Image (cartoon, rainbow, N blue to C red; front, side):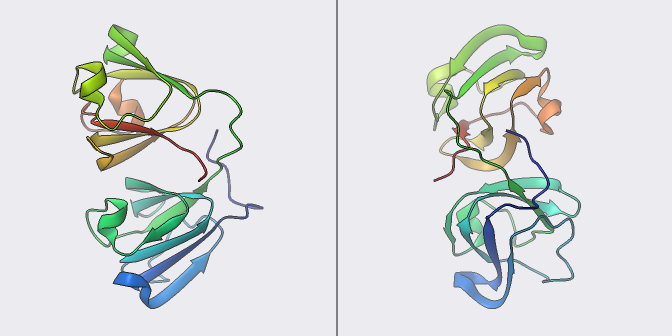
Length: 185
């Protein structure tokens, strides 16, 4: 699964300036590297279809939030730290026929204790006994790492591939509290 240009996708997302789907609305179905010309703040979102990665800074930079079909009446519902969304892109979630599979390592370069997973874990510590993931190997599927348990805090999208160090998935520290598979719901 790779992030691809959002050309012929059927996904649709609606951004609202105010909470509870009020205020100016911006509807779209394509990637956008700069949103400031469309609205100054984003306090609620409705995802009609598809999966989307939202960024707090232009050009797909900064904190990311992965949203799937549903309603998010305020930024806290997507675990946002503020009402600042400056760019977004569609995430191509294909029909995933295989089993999701990820290997987590307690040390960089795939060293130390290893734990393999194929399902969502709301508390990594309950299963892995470590609060830090220094490296990982995504064998199948796309995954979201959350900084805190119960799918809260900063989010990081990881796709199939090797991540030798937590900086490889753009994290500033190796703390991972929970993990979730990216699936179309």
